[in-house]
Length: 436
Image 1 (cartoon, helix red, strand yellow):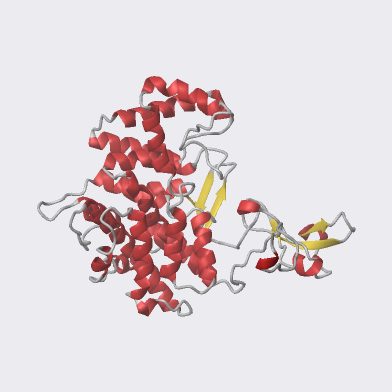
Image 2: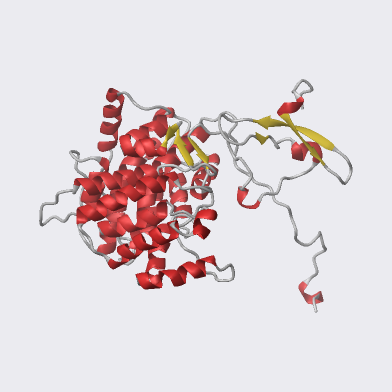
């Protein structure tokens, strides 16, 4: 520890067993809580930090996304998420996350062109799809196909080459909607639909998902805008499980396609990407508006395992800023489609009652982004098996931005967490014939 480091810029760690202490340098960011650098703690004191779930551990320095869960703030490169969702579009947000700032009109047009002309998949990939069982889950297909991209695009797997990193980034963002739409088509037994260069990112995804060759398909602009907002709101969310997975995989030098496939696999877990599907399962369990008070009472009971899915968030202790935008889109979609779905009416009534209940307000259990996104996607015609797939399409740009930042970090090392061993002490091997 440099002796000239001011005391207020250090944190002192003391081992009360023997009185030893170490002054560790503080790490202060632009916003949020400061940290302290523990990298020297093991070599200096033979001590490890222990933090299951990494709730109090900063794994990296990042310029991409900032979250203040207490105040309900989410910033991408400094820009509030509600402003981006209201005034921007997904392609501009992609550029922002990757480049660090908003593009000029010319830069945006160039970026959109690069994405548009990378949306097609190698034709042999269609044969790869046919290797899956017809009833394969779309997320299983996503993990396999994205991982296989490195077998088709050898010219963009050298992570040491900035040009190849850029091409791989563009390819992944561009091809993910095609891969996702084809996963849906394969799952439903319909023919694959190809991307069209005259459509926007969201329009293209809806066209490839819901159109068929035997008739013309016109994209509803309200649904396209809602889809674009869903992509924006899920584009990045700091060091969540799937993003951390991408960074850990990337730290080994793995190619970007393998890293994103690892992120998709992590996202597939129901505790991460499956929350909006759980919301609809909960609504089906409630069944009717008359039963809402019964389930509200159960949700308040600590001894009852039932919980209101889509309410509250591990990070946000205030209203999820993404939920406010998603709520607005939800009402717009339902109005545009003129739907009278009992399940959707049930969801709206549940939202109203919960927001007026002192228990949920006092405990800051507000509807989160997953509560509304599940309702929107159901209204648009997506089966629940596609919900996490759409999450993966949106989050790909965040994964790539985080992967790119990690690769370009001069302090980057292969991730290698330590453990506190609680197993048996060293013991001698007993031959088989000597064991009773």
